[in-house]
Image 1 (cartoon, rainbow, N blue to C red):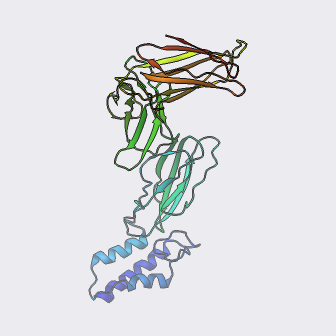
Image 2 (image 1 turned 135 degrees about the vertical axis):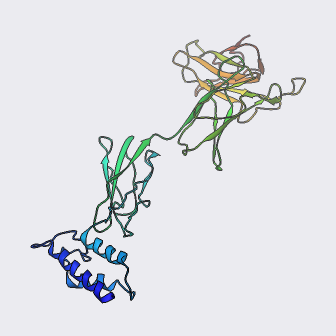
Length: 359
C-alpha cells in the first residue's frame, strides 16, 4: 500500500515539475534549495517524509499541496502597537507577533514609509524581528513590516510612532488672596514607580517639571506657615494631573521699592534679598533666617525698581547688594494684610540711614 501511494506521489511530483517547462522559476513549490528547479533529490525528500507503513490520504494531500502550491497560505506580519516616544528616545519596532500558518520560519524586512521632513533617521536591525530607530525630529513616523516564509511575502503591517517633546507638568499655587504664592515645594511622584521630582514656586506661584519619564504623577504642594507656626493647607491637598493649580489658606503679598545711589540716581541690577526670620511668642529675639524655603531674591530694573511677589505673611529683613555700593539693612518688619513698599539709597561708609519703609 505504501509503495503504491509513493508511486502515485512520485508521478504527481514529476507532473508538478513539468508544469513549469523551460527556464527555472523562482518560488517554485517544493524547491527546497531555492534554485528554481524541483530536482529528483527534492522529490525524494518529500517521498522519504512518509515513515509509517500505512500513509494516510491527508499526508499525501499535504505533500501534493506543498508542491502544487495549493492551500499554502501567506505569513501574517504584526508590527506591534502604535507608540508615542520622547524625542531622542529609541523606539523599538516589535514584529515578534508575526506568524506563519504553515509552521515555517520567517524572515523580516522593516522599512520607514514616512518621517518628518528633514529627518535623516534610519532603521537599525531592519532584518530582525525587533528593530529600532531614534526619532531626530518631532512628528510622526510610519514603519512597515513584511515577513516571508521562504515562499510567500506577507501583506504589509504598519505601525506609527509619534515623537513628542519631553513630558512636563506645570501649574500654579495661589494664595488665599488669589495671588501667586512663592516658596512652595511641589513634589511630582510617579504613580506605581519609585521616582519623584521637586520644584519650588516663584513669585507668580508657578511651578514646572520638565523632562519627566512618561507616566502618571501625583502632585503635592507643601509649605510651612512660619508666621503661624503651622503647615499651609492646600486645596486640593494633592492631585494626579498633567496641568493643575492649587489654592492655599496662606495669604501672599508684594514687597517693592526703588534703589538709588548716594547722588539719588537709579541703580540697576541691585540684588534684593528678602529673608524670613523665626521669632518667639514675644517677637524677640529673632533666631536667624529660615533656610531654604523662605529666602526670596529679585534684581532692580533699568530705572532702579524691584518687586518681590508671592511673599507669605511673616517677619522679614531685606538687604540690597551691588559691587561698589554700601547699603543699610532693614530692621525686622512684618508683612501681613497688605503689600509693602521699601526704598533704599546707597550710603557712604560709616554713615547710617538710607532706608525708607512705606507702611
